[in-house]
Image (cartoon, rainbow over all chains, first blue to last red):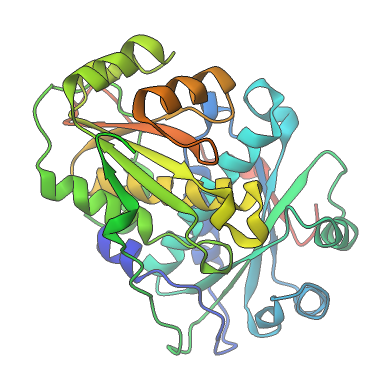
Length: 171
Length: 171
């Protein structure tokens, strides 16, 4: 798939057929995540790949806006590690992991998969739930839970271009 | 260009020929930025497109790690607006703008351009410098200054894949 098409066709997919996503495609998504840039190339990220149905159902039941996990084939949790980030700053860890997440979303579109970012950080309750469910250490911040599956085709991209959001030369 | 190739071939390009980038390509980069996802679709971003040579030179002279601006054809500043973000949270504004920035970087690669994210936020001095230079309001956070130009070909992608960064099912 063409890169610009993948960027413009990417959408938040919340409707999955329930079919399985091949393991090789999931690993390609993780590779895409790790290809992101990071401040001073510190790569302050780790990833949890969940395919266990009970775990996905538990996320569907306990994370608001994550009901689609019950029909997802997998979930990638992108975890930010401030300790590893440039100047050990949480902000850089979050920014770098956001770029990794966006790579995963575009790669999913390119592979014909559906994906949606469901936020964990900065919501304390969700962070605590994910920490407990998946054994995430205290010094690691689960940024999001990206649901991944085969799209039904119901979800469509939005045109969000707004020329008034561009300033030329100065604000 | 293939989407996965664009993701894996994307690199921080700091060496530019000095040639001009056509305006249509710069506008396509901005469109790519606005195609990013954002929390509750709030799109808490605006963009400044700088092509003025004196302004680019001033950034090269005053922002550390932005020396390449002197040979860049343009710079896009991605600006985060907490006031517009979901629950008016700065964190969401920064995350959403990071995704928009990553779209810009991938689109640049796809268009045969070179680009590099130079950090502004969270460094207070750099934020203040950019605010003053470009008239950015107090409630708007310049996240970065993305240098854009025609690549000389010197900069090459890194393989950053580390399987030990993947946890299966649990941390």
